[in-house]
Length: 488
Image (cartoon, rainbow, N blue to C red):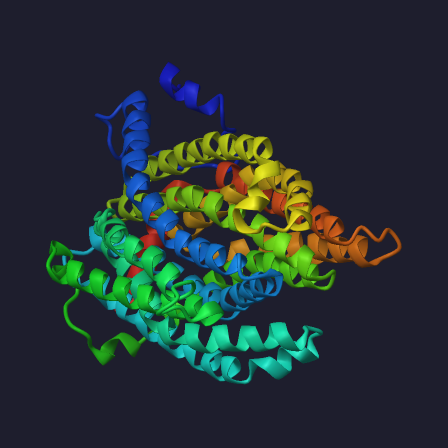
């Protein structure tokens, strides 16, 4: 029978429907103590990760803010450039590095040879470097593609300038993400926070000097130059931190042996990228769809997505911390702790998500003026904000539950849930409402997107609560590490 303390947790969450082999892996730890430990660990671990995510995201926020005052076309071009960067570079590369959470956390606790963590990280470095090659080719010839897609000549030209400059800082940004996941797997959560905290004031100063300064200002192109400088500083800072911390002991030196059996990495990395692509690309397609209704609509959409990017960071940070915790627990064969970590994390995510939704709704009339002085942009932003506020909790929960699925190596499941939610339901409905007889324009896009986000979120949570056999996941994790390391 469950204790009263365990019942308290399961009042909030449904029980498992599948048969689970109970392994009392920590018999001395009561349910009440276990809940309290996981809540405290996730809370203290999430804070530095969330701060680093928020600060890193603020780089783009500051850049959009700096160019927004230049004019509607500049704001629209920066938004479109950001969409292309997300779709072509950040989305697939972050998806690839997300697979590190399936390997590194468990390898750190399951293996006596800690350099196995570095072995898996090397595979991530190879994967993201190869991924950047086609992106570089595409950005070189981007203007004709944008004009062919219906963009104006001025916006296409501005986007081309932005993207070619931004590309110079793409590789260090991806390596920074690999290093961040490498040290987090070892329980060092604050590394990226310290690095970004030191870089952030430099970025803010450069955003003024390179865009607006009468002596050094470059106008619109100063924004991507600022991001390039920031990305290189983050990479160098993280490299120095790692080299001077205990995390370096898990590196083991680069070896081309990491290419042997690299398919086992890609077996999870490709679905990880696809899982992220299914949802993220849907948001970016809505951004592109909004551009069809003019620069004012696209500028308002940029304001909304800036809010979305900010509020998404905290639940995603919880998901990243939870992925590390679950990976470490599975590596130690502590299935009960891994299960409670997932449940406590989702509870935390809802508390934070509902709070953010209320704040966004309350301040909906003021948000647009942060980015633009144009009254039309601000009014449209206020009109669209309730749609986002209504789904913000579910959107953030998708980032959180994605971390849980990555820790379990179930990225393929995420794809199977995301694809129908977004691409068979939400996106077709949204574009039909926007461009069809109803003529709802950007509001129609948001109705379809909202439905997709909610369905995807509920499907993921249903699987986590009702279908995961956590005892079995310990054996799957052990087998996955053995195959990846070539010991089986």
